[in-house]
Structure formats: structure tokens, C-alpha cells
Image 1: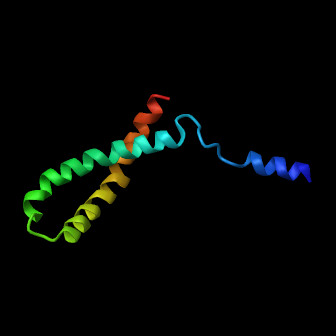
Image 2 (image 1 turned 30 degrees about the vertical axis):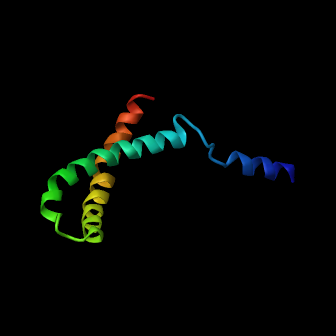
Image 3 (image 1 turned 45 degrees about the vertical axis):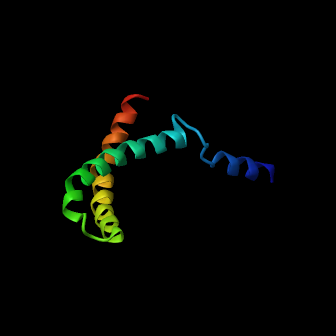
Length: 83
């Protein structure tokens, strides 16, 4: 029975591993921040008259695919380079 407990604890992912969760947070922030900044600069003059929920929806529709498909993978490659 003690063998099964040791196997169970060995399968758990450690909280911190080579940057860990903090590294994930910094990587995600580094990917999202520039995209939000550029999108706001580009779309703000065109959506200023829209309601806030509509502007937020438009921003998120553009932000999520851009971040997931391009900037987050680029940040991951950059992070691996410095490990």
C-alpha cells in the first residue's frame, strides 16, 4: 500500500519547475500586453462610439486568436532560449 502512495506523489507536477507558474504568468503577460496595446491603438478610433461591452467583445475576438496562434508560441520559444 505504501508503494501506491509513493507512485501517486511521483506523478504530481511540482509547483515550480524551471520558472514554473511564475514563468508561465510572465510569458502569458508578455504575449498579451503588446497585442492589447497595438489593438487598442488601431481599433480605438473606430470603436469609440460603441458600448463598452461591444468594444470588449471586439477586442477579445481579435486578442485571443492572435495571442494563441502567434505571440504566445513566440514567447515560449524565447523563454526556452533562456533556460
